[in-house]
Image 1 (cartoon, rainbow, N blue to C red):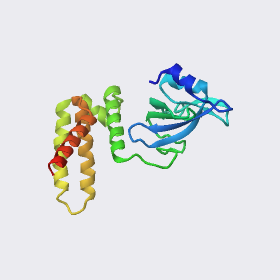
Image 2: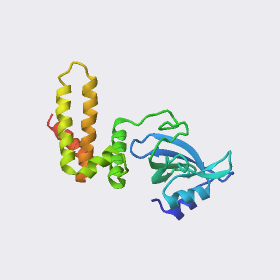
Image 3: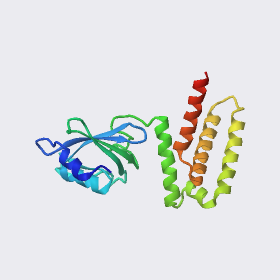
Image 4: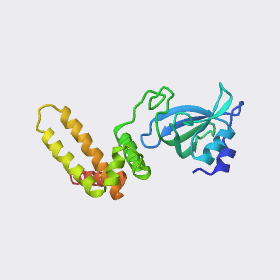
Amino acid sequence: MTDKKKMLDSVKFDGQGLVPAIVQDRATREVLMMAYMNRESLELTLDKGETYFYSRSRQEIWHKGATSGNLQSVQKLHLDCDCDTLLVEVTPSGPACHKGTYSCFDVEPQFEGFMHQLFELIERRKELRPEGSYTTYLFNSGLDKILKKVGEEATETIVASKNPESGELVSETADLIYHLMVLLVERGVSLEEVTRELKNRHASQSERS
């Protein structure tokens, strides 16, 4: 986390004691929302590791997600070159907008970012093991069960690819990718490692072409 004292001393708050804070999804790089912080809410954000803002209409500090459960875990804070705007990188646990959408700016996470979100959700399922979750059931059943499901989904994907309509193939491919992610989490392999391997292979192929 950013050095607290250095950040607080560097921010140029406006005449109302506020600074705009742009919130960005760390995985997708999409802008989620813009709100304001005063010194106290910024200090809370730095201390608690979650976003706190100042409501100009209610004239009070509010903790993002305190009521809805859609908390934002702060990963990094950046101050712009004029020291009068904050960029807050977060890992969201739900929609950013009060209307229930991913972002207040009507954007959806791109494929790579969504894959990271899904992977992080599976990691949390393994850690917390919430009751009634299918992912929890897989982790509780162990590696052999997970491997069996990966094999089943791979076979079903192959069978679906023989059908003229693509809908079943799309569905089975999604099932296969999900179960592969569960397997990676179970074995402690990160999505970044797989991505790095694919990028290295692509770079090698490009050099030879």
